[in-house]
Amino acid sequence: MQNKVLILDFGSQYTQLIGRRVRELNIFSEIKPYNKLPKDLSEYKAVILSGSPLSVRGEDAVHPDLSEIRGKKPLLGVCYGAQYLAHFHGGSVEKSNTREYGRANLSFIKENEPFFDKVSTGSQVWMSHADTIKHLPENTTLLASTHDVENAAFKFEGEETYAIQFHPEVYHSKDGKQVLENFLVNIAGMEQTWTPDAFVDKTVAELKEKIGDEKVILGLSGGVDSSVAAVLLHKAIGKNLHCIFVNNGLLRKNEFGDVLKQYEGMGLNVKGVDASARFLDDLAGESDPETKRKTIGRVFIEVFDDESHLVENAKWLAQGTIYPDVIESVSATGGPSQTIKSHHNVGGLPDFMKLKVVEPLKMLFKDEVRRVGASLGIDKALLGRHPFPGPGLAIRILGDITPEKVAILQEVDAIFIDGLKKWDLYDKVWQAGAMLLPVNSVGVMGDERTYEKCVALRAVESTDGMTADWVNLPYEFLQKTSNDIINKVPGVNRVVYDISSKPPATIEWE
Image 1: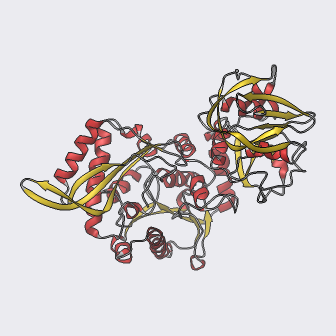
Image 2: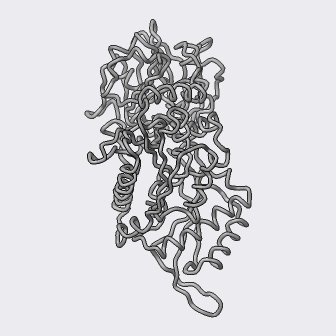
Image 3: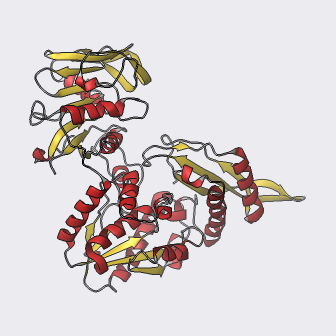
């Protein structure tokens, strides 16, 4: 594939959004750390430099060697990337007297400039920097300004090298997608051929070549990612795919049976394994979130290892890992980016399992997985399911895990999710769930004083889980849901609603 965009990550929180915006243009993008350039650059037709929390003026400024890129391939520097191109090529970057964070408007755009084709003066852009480019390098042309930032965009003469101090990848930059399209399609000449159908055809062919006639084991969760991965693999290797659905005792109410029924008729070879007692026994008394995650991951591998031995000559383990799993679990640059939390399906296998890993979705964002699923003909109801964490309710029960707490939260969660569906709100929410808090509060039921549990409801809207905002659910719905939970779930006397966005909060509480 020689129609790819290389995005060099300098540690910006927005780098992944650049990748998504490029793919929305039906152009494939790959994100690589700035200090780990691919040896073969011939695969890439254009390069984008991301933003960064660092300053080009600092001693820790990242300074990659772009000699094999600049002047040889179309290059776009975004924010830090723009300041990098200015600072290290004869211009000057200084601390800004007027720091520009948030919305701004283009007050000047150079006429007849292809880079800003179909973008008008006054277009809103999103700024996020404390430094600014004071003087442009020689042999450059100013392309755009805002009221506070004169050198908001520029290009190097005689080469296809462009730079912008705003972020075209965020939704607040109203014409940001158009700017990226102008650069990638009109200037770099890239073809817009990255589609779900093309991904399916390419991936199925690669899986056939990689796996051949060998057997693959896949852990199904009932969610979108593992289901799409399963259908992709089934399309490639048929009966050699062996799916295992493990009940870890931390699923939603009735989910074990419901999911097994859901897979009936899909042609998949699925085995259900009830290991709930094994998981709950190993989690007993453990309160630390990371330890809970690791315990669940360890027991899952043990159960999976037991089951894999029953599949004769199995050589591969398939996982539904997607891009945000990898991004949040592994620092993108080895420096500025930080690990938020570990993910249950990232990090490989212990040596004793002796299975090779195949991850057909690891380069896709969640919305892309759903589009691929639709291309494969998977039922809309399954594709529309909200994301559910691999560790299940364990990370929605703050503190230690007991069967009693699991039962309480399952009932609360069922009332909340069923209510969203009845009120026609489920498909308007990206992810929803309930949290059981490690506190008791005083209440009154009838004429008696109670001292029972508090639960928090959480519903967010998002595109890929990298950022999220809370959903403004109707007061009438929240009132009905709260009443139903308190009246129908013994042990709960208080319900609260979480109105935190990500960032600074995460979607889950642990």
